[in-house]
Image (cartoon, rainbow, N blue to C red; front, side, top):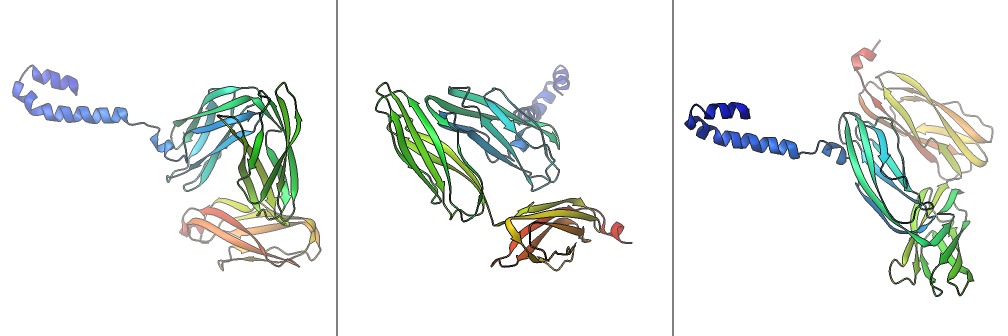
Length: 354
């Protein structure tokens, strides 16, 4: 196009003058196309595109989850995740995500091998619906004078209504008067107490941090950050990760049954496990709706610690997202427990008819 305009300028000057506004407009359009980032569509799906962990102790567990939500009608897929620094390790799932669904890219930073300021660029690549990559800058400052052993308070699986205790060893080397003044848990279901176990005039100090998860913690995953407040003039607050998985007296696996993509009238069978620390009897299993898409399993009257439910599913003749809630009544338990099944029904309703 530019060549054509130059050619015309050699023949008729008025043509150039008349076409000048058009040429300028065309140039503006080209410039806009050059400026536009082809990765913008992918960036819009992230809940955040940077992470600063701040100042942490050596050995502290440092991790973060980036949530990615599919805002489009086509499936998306995270095909690869790379980092520019060996101090950073990614975890991700390559399973395609349908519209409205979410996936997670989790990063962790090694605070044992590395010290002081560490920066890294996490590059998330997409293979579907087309190639794109999103660069995420992350950084952390790792103190060399404070060490956590282990690097986090991890209660693991805890039965709801019970108290569980864990301890962390804290070692400091530096000022002789260094001290931890208080601990801020940030959660009423977490209690913490710091106890000095050793102090040397040379500047080494040792503490034991005793942490309790209280019986009132609700069922579900708990992930909190408590703060140790020290007498340092700068960087006096040191974060510490606390994690737990609080389980009910009866747990269901999976809590969300994935039916996948099914054609109208299509059939499949899914298995659900119910577990408890003591034997129990399932009195009944019901669907919350009257769509009759599931055939309820035969129930054993025997008290067992593990029950296996086989759910036979027949997809309704209506396309779209499908969700069903199940209500399980257990003998002697005042409240029922619930779980859900979800899937996507796609295809022609006419083809499903006999």
